[in-house]
Amino acid sequence: MAAPFFSTPFQPYVYQSPEDALIPFQILGGEAQVVQIMLKPQERVVAKPGSMCFMSGSIETEHVHLPENDVGMWQWLFGKTLTSVVLRNSGPSDGFVGIAAPSLARILPIDLAMFNGGILCQPDAFLCSVNDVKVSNAVDQRGRNVAVGAEVFLRQKLSGQGLAFILAGGSVVQKNLEVGEVLAVDVSCIVAVTNTVNIQIKYNGPMRKAIFGGDNAVIAYLTGPGIVFIQSLPFQRLSHRIARAVTYPNMRENPKVLIQIAIFFFLAYVVILSSLILTE
Image (tube, rainbow, N blue to C red; front, side, top):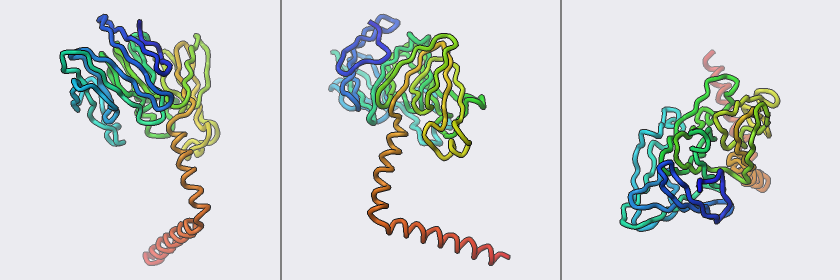
């Protein structure tokens, strides 16, 4: 049978490609999940660097630059890797490879043939793929769809007829929007949308709140028809809460930190003021 939109832990599935090739896969774990993909001789999996967790002895690993995966100047400037990992079964018998999520995330299998060959994803959503999958940038030049932050300009577009695995944090909700149906979602909670969904960005409050962050500062209004995948715990929100939990208690327990910060800014003020007086 064809791959579902997303699976439950430990439930095996069989992906059927347009060429009628059968590729079994299984998603393991509850939160930080691993996808195990079975490969016949000469079959391959394309994955992000550093995502391989385990593999059979017949699997060969190669770091290559794939022409079908566009990596532009924006990605290079913001630290994106220029290569992909190709895991190929070079043995005479079936093999397997396990691809792990890089954080506390769930893995969603997306059969692009069921989405008319394309889907838009959040930045860094792509984990690995089987068969015909192209990863490219989906830069939207329309001003109403541009939110503050470099990641918006690096939205990923997955196209082709193959099977792609993407990442989502927390619990995942799938919404099927009818024609003209409108859904309001926090921008950071959007995992993926189909190409038929119209996206409008609106700022909840003044622009400075969106620039310097805030809860639900930027809201996306999604208009159907189409399918939307929503995550309950984006990685950005999780990392911010971990940073606050680590930083704030240390500052309360060690008041010297606040004193040192105050002294630093005072000295910086004195240096700037002195330089202005000397230049007059």
